[in-house]
Image (cartoon, rainbow, N blue to C red; front, side):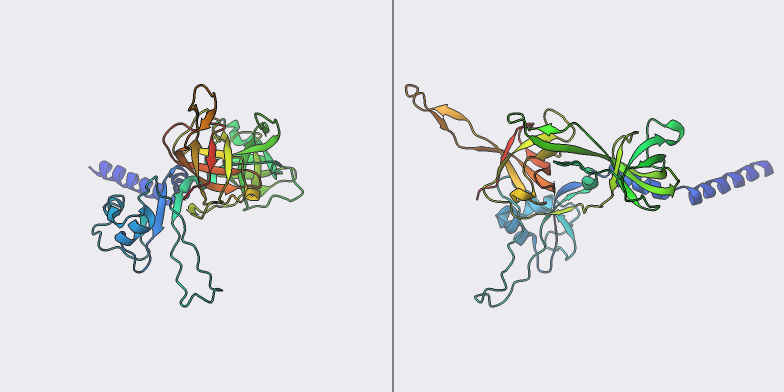
Length: 345
């Protein structure tokens, strides 16, 4: 009996010690990586009702039951509170845009309106999306070895870095790990579009040696490997506030981030328009197709039929001549060369 009690006591001490010294911060980091929440959201303001929000975002107040159905956390549809986050019911035929700001310079405005909180798309994996840019990012360093020669590098592992920039790596600083692929060229004109930057994780420098640096992996988006490069880490907000799209814009899909031949909802694409074209984070654009048909068989003249909208993309990140976009909705597969246009009222 005494022996059993002693064993029980030792087990309790071991369990308590494990709880004290277990690196829960690493577990929290892993949870941050695997979270994949996404969707259109809005933060409730003073005076908001589901009726009003349904009118604003679905173009009809009578659709408020759909908005309530989308938010199971609201027990009573007649009571919503400021600061509460609600998921918007998104009708495909109605665009969700930010309200236009009031021009306080106009003398006709007697009483300035308080601008409403902008709706936003919440995309938790925002930090792992890469980009395409014409001039590749100059790397700060390159991973030349992994401690213990591990093939599967994960959170907590140590990597050794060779510096590749005149700007020294600093202990405590974080860097995004990435790799690049062959330059992308236009299929028809053969002109250079840019180089894809594929993000694989985040490391934090722990020690500087005379000829190299040591870093610990703090986030792993994909498999980190030897020869992966480093750039300064910049944390992006998962709230992508919606803004009006540039009118009259037309472009095409360059390539899918995962290099798949086809893609659908929640896939990342790169498009051939960027900040110089007026493309900004938070803009929505439509995928469309337009067929030709002969009205008169004798005339042999093709007539353009009415364009068909079959999907929507959301701009997450914009470079000068390209942008990273998320497919928020699609009725069919979307691949390289797919055409998109500005929403039309």
